[in-house]
Image (cartoon, rainbow, N blue to C red; front, side, top):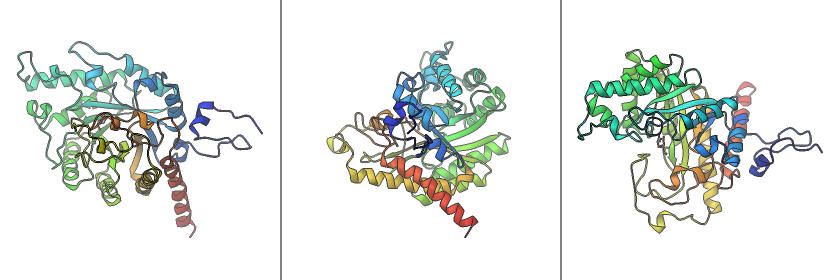
Length: 384
Ligand code: GLA
C-alpha cells in the first residue's frame, strides 16, 4: 500500500482518505461542490495566521472561498478617525492568496461593530450628513482601494432592513437618509470598479423582509448600481426557514437578475431563547440551565436530526445551483461558532459540519452525500 501523501492532520479530521491507489476516496467539500458552487468559511485570526494549525489545515482542505469573521469590520480596521489597522486584514488576504481561494470582503457599512466617532461629535450630538458621507467615502475608498484586484467581492451594506421590510433606523439612516445605501455602493464601485458588490442580510426568507429587500435592490439597479448578488446569511434553525421559503427566496432574487450567495450558514440546534428567526447580533438573553441542554455533548438523535436538516437545506441549494455562486459557513468547527455566545453567553452549540476536535460530523457526510444524490438526479434527467 502506498504511503499516505497528505497531512496527518487531515487524516485526524477523518475527511479525506487515500485508497489503495493513493487517490482520495472521500471528497473534500470544495471538490464535492466544484461542479455546483464555491464553498466558503468565515475565518478568525487564529485560523488565517495558522496559530490554529488544525483549523488552518481543515480550511485548506475543504474550502475554496473565505470571509473574514471580524478583521475587516469597521471597528477593527478603522478604529480612530486617522487610524487604520491593516495588519490582520493583510494577513487574511495573504492567506487566501497563498491558498488560491476566492477572497470576500465583509463588511463596509453596518450598524454594528462601527465605532461611535463615526456618527457622533465629541459633545454627543450626531454629525452632519456631509460629514458622515465624507467619512463613509474615505473609509470605503481606503479599505476597498487597498485590496483592489485581490478581494473578489464586498458585502457593501449589511443588514439595512427591519423584519417588516422597512429601512432600519440606524445612524446611517438617521444622519444621511435612505440614500446611504446607494452612496455606499457608489463609493465601493468607484474604489474598485471590478469588485463584485453584494447586499447582505438575514431572515430574507420571511416574506415582509424579502419584499423590502426586493424593493431595495430594484432601487439600486434603477440607479445604475452594478449589484452582483444578494447574500442570504442563513443563520438557520432546525425548523426555519422551510425548504419552500428558502427556494422561493432564491428564485425571487434570481428573477431580478442577481446571483444569490449563502453567506453565513449555520444551523442552531439549541433552544430558541426567545430569538426565533433572527440573527440580530445585539440581542442578549440571560443564561438558564435549560437553554444549554447539550453542555456534555450532542445526543446521537439530535446529531442525526442535524444531519437530516443539513441534507434538506443542501437539497434546496443544489436544486437552485444555477442561481447560487457561493455557500459560506459561519465558522469551521463548532468550537469557533458565535452561537456558543449568542444570544446567551457560554452555551455549547453544534451548528457546523466539524465538531470541537475538528472531526467531520454526520452532518458533514450528509452534505457530501447530497452532491451524489444531485448527480444521480442529473443523470436520470439526461438519460431517463
Ligand atoms: C451577522 C454579521 C456577521 C457576524 C454574525 C454573527 O450576521 O453579518 O459579521 O457578526 O452576525 O457573528
